[in-house]
Length: 322
Length: 216
Image 1 (cartoon, each protein chain N blue to C red):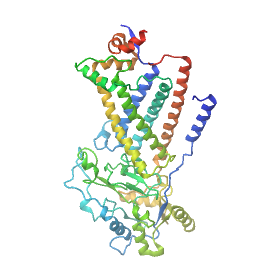
Image 2 (cartoon, chains in turn brown, purple; image 1 turned 90 degrees about the horizontal axis):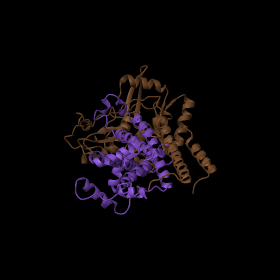
Image 3 (spheres, rainbow over the protein chains, first blue to last red; image 1 turned 90 degrees about the vertical axis):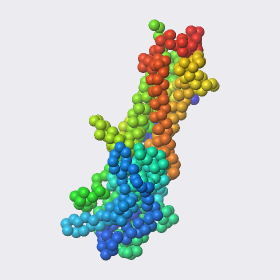
Image 4 (spheres, chains in turn red, brown; image 1 turned 60 degrees about the horizontal axis):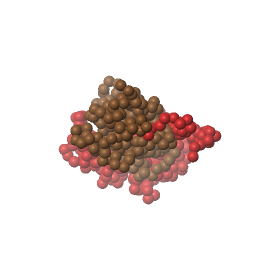
């Protein structure tokens, strides 16, 4: 059953080749993507609430948290995150508002940016959740399972855009050690998972189309089509794209006539809690995956080493245990 | 006092590599849960890094390199050399209870071979936990590298298994340490794992079956 020297070398070479695979993202991209066209979005200026925001709120209203009160603090800290008294707040992301219109003014021109989860190709929130409460679906959307989420907010900490929002006083943690661990449930856009699964568009996209028709600021469709459409418009109209490279790639592409660096600067100056940085590397791919390859490589080498060492001892008849 | 060789250098390296990297894995594993910020650990001098999940994960992976290597080497080295003295035998559970009771002065310790029955039971238990952790951990690595694609449910279940068995590993580690700290006679075993040697008197008294085998 032991391998010959030639077989050993062949096995090691094969293993090495496997581990030296390309460094760039090999993320499974998902079936769908969205374009959010900032040249077309005016934030529904003639409406009380932007259509995408009101459609999202209407469609998801039955899924919003109903916390048990009084809510305990996150012992030994003295705080807790409760948005339940601010359910009407629509100018930022909250557990009750999963998309909002971020407004910035650049060179005296107003820009309206619908902001929600980018649905990354290799989402750090999904990869990092210790309870498996976050999953990436074949459609490309990342989804929080609110019955499994502990509300530790790690997903928000690792998200380059701080998208998931926490509501205390709800969820699994209340049934275990509510005083000492857990903090509620995280909420964010899931791209209307039940709609896209059956071939419909997310509610926000449908609402935008309903208002602007063919000039809709949001387009949803097959990823390949959306990506080529964005690329074509970028070339033909000189538009800038955001979301294709950020965090290793996402399934949300923003189009803008001004560079996204200017938008980033304006958002940063506003000190908005939902940033839009341009230079976002995928830390999973850059910092974690190379070490993952080393874990695999060293495991295989140690198996080979263990076999070789045992063979050598068996041959030499060294002392053994019992 | 005459001494008897209990552990080889390779065995000690295996044990301490697993133990020390295991401690770091437990610490960083807990750090992967969002606890350290909440409990002010990040504010302790030298512990600010524990608040960065990516750094914590990097340290977790570096420890996993040592841990997995030592475990795999251990399995293949001793498995193929037919050194199976730590595999549980019939009656080990019963004898472990007798042995633990004897340390409290109830009854007599059963005569033991090189390894105590409780060591074999512990080895099986910890070994099983370690294998589940390594298997689920490697699946996580393969998934991050996109070498395997799991269904959303399979990914969630695997993650949950890794976290739950991480908690079991912490418990097993605490039990392992307390057996050394609480039961004075077990400290000979710690000495044996640190130096490789134990006293002949100890072996004669506690591992009489092994002693008789050596004398033959």
